[in-house]
Length: 291
Ligand code: NAD
Image (spheres, rainbow, N blue to C red):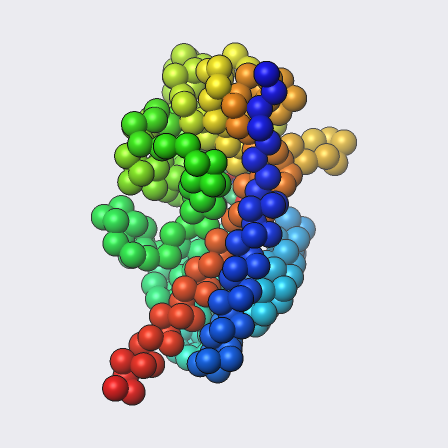
């Protein structure tokens, strides 16, 4: 039987309509316009296209998007100064520095310089720490979007065996953590894992976040598993594909995400959600202040 295709695009459209309505309310009732500052350094074509997509999504949701684009010669000090400016700018609710950065800039120093209160990417160590101990915070967008997609299926996550392939700080590690919070039993696999298929075949929910085109064929998948494909890989033909061999695996899985149109649109949606959350928080802080 062929799997149900989880349309990240459709779910994202629904969520963005809700976010847009909340933005309109905030503008009308509190005169607060949610605003995201996006900083892009250099000319990486993929980064350009991600930034364009984020800018378009903000505009469609009625949010302001300030785009600062600098040449790759920008120094680390200049970048940190720019971030410090936005940290102190009350009308800006979210700051996003598009990664990767040029080699001469220390990525961790940059992430740590963003105020945790404006870190809508959810990469700051303070926010990662809060996520680990289940405190309210900005959740990293891709893992957040994946959990929302799984929840939209109306299947219970509790007690399910989740296998995550990949242990990066931005996808693999946090998505496992968020699903642990939903009472799943979580196993992580990575490049040093031995006999990968023997582990992935135990997964009720399999999440592939590797970055290798079509690595996961049907021999890695249990019958009826939910398969979430995070990978974005460009084939020599120019076509995008995921880490999962979609055509073959969809015959074995119960639910599967496509690439493109799966996890990607949800990632940007959760960025909008985090920016909205930050603006709403600034509204409640203003209220407390004026009481
Ligand atoms: P990464 O390179 O930081 O991590 C890749 C992980 O895969 C590593 O932990 C590594 O141990 C593991 N790995 C590598 N080869 C493996 C193998 N043969 N077997 C098992 N594990 C292996 O990448 P990342 O930033 O986590 O991104 C992963 C993929 O997800 C990339 O294709 C990236 O483009 C994509 N991505 C998509 C979105 C989205 O919104 N759709 C967001 C972030 C990342």
